[in-house]
Length: 299
Length: 299
Image 1: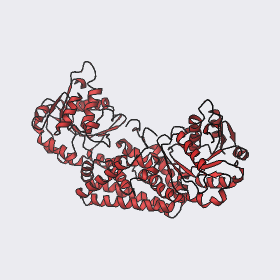
Image 2: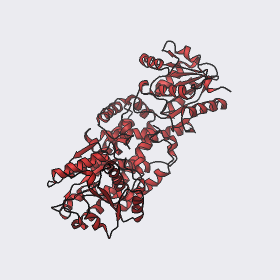
Image 3: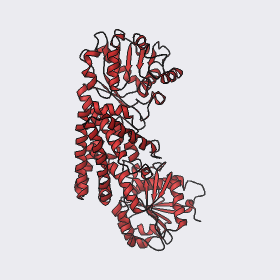
Image 4: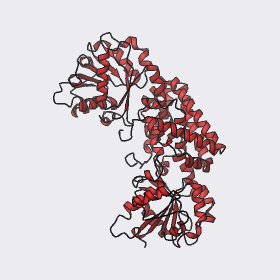
């Protein structure tokens, strides 16, 4: 049985997520005195690599010309790129992975990953798609932190051919990084659920900021507007890609939300207190019943 | 010049807000050794009064039969009731206030307060309407805390006859309670802005929970859904009253929000990446420009 603290980890893309994953591994997995493992980092941005090396987040850095040398050494490769770039990278470097390696990604939408599976998968490499449900409104390695995963969810979408021992190893890595709940599902369910919990929320937060009369309105804020719109400090290129890649599921949820909103709007317009109160009581009961492990303190 | 630490404070309604205000005054104003002031509490709920007395949040408690005796002693009265109950209380007990007293309220909508001004105001009592922009998704005195006001906004709507020295005293009390920003405006501007920053946000959060397929969906959450819907653990009777009392302003903002949402929805439906990205870049710029003093840590 492989020991997590003795593995060689490769991080492809040292941005906010890649950096945070590297730091969580450094702190929670390689922090024991007996650890023989190490972390290698690849990015096309030389400044991110320099920073990661100077902070000892990674033990060695690789660029576009040397990345295949990195992949050849890694027992575990984390591809932390945007969705389309993830597919492209996995295709382009398919032959470079070390035999027996576990490879995973962090793409927020999986349909396009699974559509390219035939060009990605290799018999002797275990590709286990995943989605760490954590992030930040700030971008880049400079804002990465090994602590953003505590009390968060991780979604895994193992393939039919995924080896049980590799899945077990990956699950123990995820727990070690600080995640509290691991959900195993398939790409279809993932994309459907994520369209609601993540993409719809970003659409709503963005529309709410767009509809503000001015940027001075926060002088009248009590925390609600701030909480609802923190995620509107959005990475526009990434979310544009996610919205379009998961377009059909997202439209479904937007329409369902608008329908709910129109019901409540109607009750308010017609001044129907009993209907408003029943609507809100039901909402309160549902929200209280939702088992949220993500706490403010944990973010 | 009156000293805040020597005043007699009366709290009408020892719920979440009344209790929190009493605790903030107890801790931040009457906490000095030389303080000669005290806090009196009134509620129709005997259990809340008992708890407030046993925790030494108030020095004496009053019920419906004795509340006028309380009002007769108070230099500063905080009416912490729902909007319509606030108007009713101020009318019913108009003659009981101590001459020279300052009276304020916490109602989240002001049109109905100002519509009844003729029946509320007395020449020898300074009624200064206000709105502390803080709260909690939990209700009742048992959940009150003197710390919920830190880094929050307070909106004041002084009347034409408000005495400058009373306004100055009130402002110093607000600052002492922990609020960081005091905005002075009128009822019309207040109700218009609050319909956006507060009521619209509660409508959106409620509709989002209403549109959820099931209560298990949070297993796929990464914090966004949780942040957007915390306020959906809503006090249904209170918010029903607020939505209807501020109906016209709220409908205006709901429609503006739906218009913004429909634009973004259209870009997604038509797969127009350049338009989505431009929309999101603009939203990000606006949100970053918003001066939010309300921090997560402060709540």
